[in-house]
Length: 208
Image 1: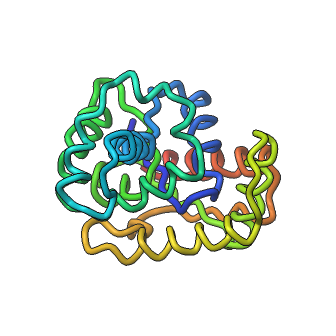
Image 2 (image 1 turned 135 degrees about the vertical axis):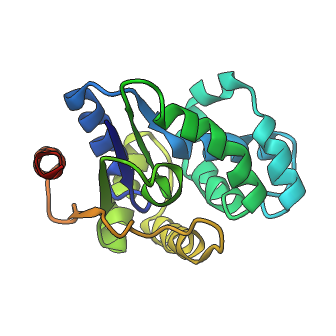
């Protein structure tokens, strides 16, 4: 069984994807982490994330970089959004994701284009969303919990900019697959969102 979980930043898709993977006993891949690693690699080599050649060179990151907690920072998240607009970067990372999705026994992947590009054959596709202001408040609170001195205004502006980049890019834009099940987490607690996501997956499996 393959489950694809897509959605914009801070929608809760990462938390829900991990919970779903645990519930259904599936290997889990946070594909956004791959793009964050590319962005970090570009930064380490003092490159320009908006330059296609620099971004492609960043795809040669060592696997050990995936364990670096700095990849979860807001700064690296912005770089990930910028390098992801380059078609060559997406092509370079796609095979890794496709191979993971197609492993024996299935898998669960979360990202921006799992249900539309990486695993269009997925048994269940979820698209997780929430209003931009709510997503910004969540991210702002998360950053403060980690001791990061950031303003809500800056976080909100960054999320809006990322949404525009992710949805407007020519290659694999962020959008729900035609057969995706939509879940708005804006008014839900984490526990309620997890239960709602499990119910949606089970409802789709019952129909297949």
